[in-house]
Length: 388
Ligand SMILES: *[C@@H]1O[C@H](CO)[C@@H](O)[C@H](O)[C@H]1NC(C)=O
Ligand SMILES: *[C@@H]1O[C@H](CO)[C@@H](O)[C@H](O)[C@H]1NC(C)=O
Ligand SMILES: *[C@@H]1O[C@H](CO)[C@@H](O)[C@H](O)[C@H]1NC(C)=O
Ligand SMILES: *[C@@H]1O[C@H](CO)[C@@H](O)[C@H](O)[C@H]1NC(C)=O
Ligand SMILES: *[C@@H]1O[C@H](CO)[C@@H](O)[C@H](O)[C@H]1NC(C)=O
Ligand SMILES: *[C@@H]1O[C@H](CO)[C@@H](O)[C@H](O)[C@H]1NC(C)=O
Ligand SMILES: *[C@@H]1O[C@H](CO)[C@@H](O)[C@H](O)[C@H]1NC(C)=O
Ligand SMILES: *[C@@H]1O[C@H](CO)[C@@H](O)[C@H](O)[C@H]1NC(C)=O
Ligand SMILES: *[C@@H]1O[C@H](CO)[C@@H](O)[C@H](O)[C@H]1NC(C)=O
Image (tube, rainbow, N blue to C red):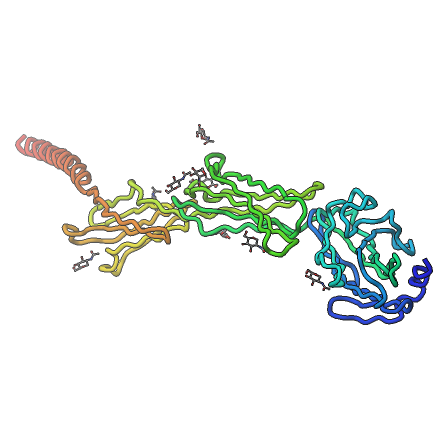
């Protein structure tokens, strides 16, 4: 007890800022130093926080147990009622709210490493944390509470899950991966997938969901992820997929991504060519994502032509117009391609002239006959009049 009173009075006698934090030593008894981070340690609800810490004791002291407390900063020294961690996990004084949530990073006490990780954080875990060693001083049970404290501030969860989408191609099985934020060793978060179609209908994803836990990162950190495996199809293009990660204590976070599926369709059947007099008009229609490019090999042989391309959603309509003198051996090919494929089609040429001719023949003779008969009538009348 004598020692403890002295601690608060004479700590800070010797302080050294170092890379890992600020090292502070007590003036008496000598040799009790602790290194804690300078300033506030911040973390987010649902995740975990590490309080990095190392300590030394006087050479006559043998460390046996490490103890952490959390109490109001106004209390000069936390008491056993404030215990949140004890090397002996079964110590009944550990507050129930912290039981099972706090672990030592380095189990070997002789390493003088007092770092702890607190899992399944709640905003109420914000506060001031104090460290104590229990052991033997000259063979007698004793302890020392270090005066400097670690200040922890827990904010609402703002980190988002990380969703990885490989390039998606129609007809190919694909796997989306969602990794929960945080590298903690607390309760397993719950990871769920939901999706919403681009159109009203259709894009329901039928697939397999698998949860992973990677424990190997370090002894006390884990990485949680979930995968969604499905066969990509054109209908999935534009679908919004949401990965939601729920931690204990109502902390949840989600990320939404929009799927881009590379797909490609054959050239549509209503593509065709039409000749009217000498004007050749060809229309080639195709669909896909990314939008296919339409090429007309025929145009290489012409210098004067017009091309009109119109795009509606994922449909491309390319219309060419040119004058052809001799179309007897004209083959009009349309080539459509995007990164997922290429399609070629020789377009049928519908000759509108026959129809035109037909109209012409039906109209012209009629007119001719009408005119001829009129002339004949007039001639007849004139002749008649003259003769008369
Ligand atoms: C404490 O131990 C942990 C785990 O072995 C290590 O990552 C950390 O760097 C150590 N801290 C100090 C201050 O030695
Ligand atoms: C959605 O698809 C179902 C059949 O799968 C069909 O009966 C329904 O009419 C479609 N709804 C819309 C809005 O397209
Ligand atoms: C988490 O685990 C996944 C595989 O399970 C790995 O690809 C990823 O890099 C890990 N993330 C971190 C931050 O270690
Ligand atoms: C999902 O899993 C089942 C059974 O393991 C398997 O038959 C099916 O092919 C899987 N589906 C996908 C899209 O991987
Ligand atoms: C996914 O596509 C592959 C290859 O086309 C096929 O073998 C497999 O059965 C499909 N799986 C499902 C669940 O449709
Ligand atoms: C999908 O494509 C659009 C436009 O092509 C692009 O802006 C967007 O970033 C793409 N999304 C993904 C997840 O690749
Ligand atoms: C272009 O003209 C050449 C020579 O007349 C002919 O062999 C070739 O087939 C034509 N190309 C196209 C695409 O019509
Ligand atoms: C194009 O897409 C929009 C919205 O996705 C839809 O409302 C519209 O009907 C589509 N147009 C055609 C021609 O399919
Ligand atoms: C294609 O575009 C042309 C002109 O841009 C238009 O006259 C034609 O109706 C369109 N065809 C279709 C099927 O949309």
